[in-house]
Length: 259
Image (cartoon, rainbow, N blue to C red; front, side):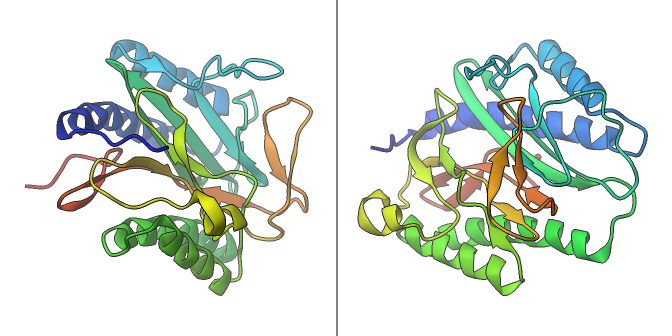
């Protein structure tokens, strides 16, 4: 059962979300050929230390605890890539996912970056994945059920010739990084039958479409964390933490409000 948050709690979640946005600006400034993913991760970790917030990815339980404050997924890596001494090169794409807890409240966001110049097809993949997240935010203001949004997200991606990753979905977020409800980016059987939820004021969710150029199927790498496409084709990932207020959707991991 999803938890509805008060306006005061949403304001606190926004503070955490803004720090996540700032971390992404730092990371984005470092993305270029010749840089290692470990160097970007180290800079984000130092930034979190300076802001006196707790990274919520580092130490996440698994066969081995997740060792970094960011997930760095390159090219065919879909999500949960581990930062390393891998050097980024011209034409790569890099998905950066990170989050923090500030005074007990969490923020979580992901962005996929081109590294230098990329092919038109890869740029289209990035644009469509960013676009489907924008579509979801727009439709959250118009729809009453998440299933209505998820259906439109799936159609949008498929109409552009790409596939929606179904093995991973978005999630509720608040005191913990992962809370109810599950937030799929496609119209799943569970969503049709029992997993749907209403888009009502107080709901806070992390919406995170992952879109593959080829097959939607993915596999786990031997490091126990990295998820990669089975066909080796590129994948992109965007995510925002979003609250529903009386006035509509409020992106908690965006930059400063205008005006």
